[in-house]
Image (cartoon, rainbow, N blue to C red; front, side):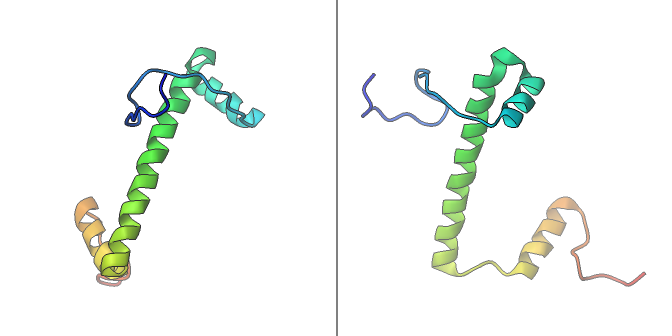
Length: 93
């Protein structure tokens, strides 16, 4: 296979590699997905990590262009999304 070919995470042909994990991590994965599900589990975990890394890059770019987000505004928006009262506000009990 040509190493110059670009694929998005989760696309393209499968390729074998060697991965070293601690015994406890491998045991936990096998308990969750069985011995034959390890590769698929690690593939999904790697895809999620790439998504998180890309989101971290996007947030860093936004912060560099606009400054960091206001924590109170973030808390208020989170409260609207989750239906919870923002912490540090509201009537005392």
